[in-house]
Image 1 (cartoon, helix red, strand yellow):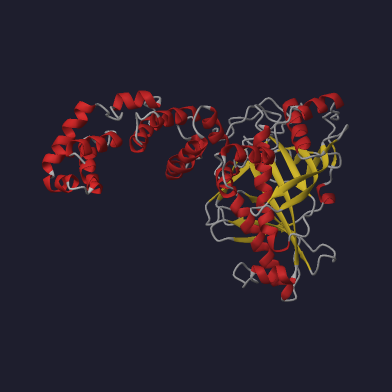
Image 2 (cartoon, helix red, strand yellow):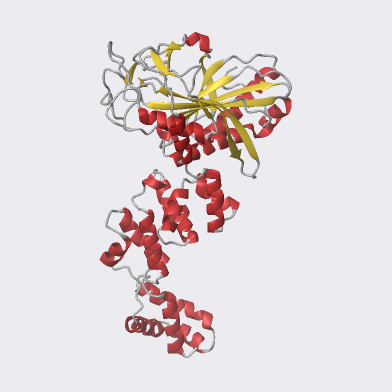
Length: 501
C-alpha cells in the first residue's frame, strides 16, 4: 500500500477494528558525561569534537559505568511506580549501522533496572487512563548520520553520508509501555497525553531537558488493529523517532487509518519500522522489524553487574519531587484558574515560569497574563521556547510591580520589556534610562490639559453641558501629547475640574 492509497476514515476504522498502541520513549539524560566514558556532551557541539577511544569503540578501550546515570534511572523507575531490580546486567545488542562505531549497542535486555510500573494519564475531559509500564532500561545512544543530496534527506538517493559520533554513548533510558488496551476512538489522544505526561514527569525529576525538537525525548509508536477486544493482538508497526506531541497523535491516527484500509481490502499488515513525514502527515515503510533473537543479545563482559543498594533506593524514593499531576491541581487551586486555563499554561511549558513569577511577588493573574500573552507572542515570533527569552521571572514580577504602583501603564510596560529583552538591564533601569515612567505631576499634566481644552473648544463645551463621556477625546489628546506617559485617571480628574463637570 502506497502513501497515496485512499485511507479509511478514522471514525470508521475504530468502529470496525479495536486499535492497540504501545509506546517506546527514549530519554536522553542530562548527565555531564557520557554513559561509559568521560566525554562531556552538549547540544550542537562541532561534529566529532566530543569523542574518545571508548565511545568510538576503538580496540582495547574499556567502558566504566556513569553513576549519575544509574541514579537518574532509579529515580525515573521509582517515579513510574516500578520495581527496582536488586541485580541487573548490561548486554550487547548486535546490529550493524554506520552510526554505531562498535557495531553493537550496550543496553539492557532481560535484566532491566526498573520493571512492572504504571503511569496515570489524564485526558482533556478529565478521564484518567492507567498506562502499564513494562520496563525502563539503561542504554547508550548512537551517533548521527546526515545523508547529503537527494530529495528526502534519507540514505536512499543521497550522494554521500556524514557521521557525527558526538551523540554516541550519551546515556539513554528507554521506557516501554505494555499494550494500551480499550482506548477505542481515543487511542491517538491517549498516546499524545501519555508522552506529554511522561515529559512533565521527567522534567520535574530534573533528569533530562526533554526537548523533543532537540531529540532529548524521542517516541516510537507501535500500532496494531484486531477485529474485536477479545481477539489476539494484531501485527504491529513501529513508527520511529516521532519528535513532537502533535506528531505522536497524527502518526497514530494515520497508522490506524492505513492499517484499516489494508485489512478491509483483504490485505495483511507487515511487521516493520516506518518513518513519519511531518510535512505530508504520512508514514512510509522502513525495514522489517527485528525480533529480540535477531539482535543476538549476550551479557556485556566488560561491565560488572548493577546492584542498587536497597537503602539507597529508598532514600531516592523519599527525595522524589511532588508528582506533576498533584502539583498542577495544587497550583490551579492556589491561582484560581479554570481547567482550560491551567491546561494552556501547562501545554505552553509556562508552569515553572508562572510559578517562579508568583514566588517573586506578582499576582497569579498578572504572571499568567505576561507569560501566556506578550511573552508567548514574542517567543513564537522569535522561534524560541518561552524559557529561552532573555527575561527572568523575577524581572517579570518587577515589571508588574511598576504597573501595580502606577509608575507604568501596560503600554509603557511593553516598551520597558523591549529594553529588558534587548539586554539593557532590569525593568526599573530601563524605565529610568528610556524616560518611560508615568507622569503624574499636576503642573505638567495641567498645562497639557489646558492646551487640549484650548485646541478642542467644541468638545469642551459638550463636557461643560454635562456630556461627560465626551471628555474621552480631551483625555486622548493629552495622552498623545504625553506619549502615553500620563496618568490617565489623573488626567480625567483634571479635565473635569477645569470644565466644572
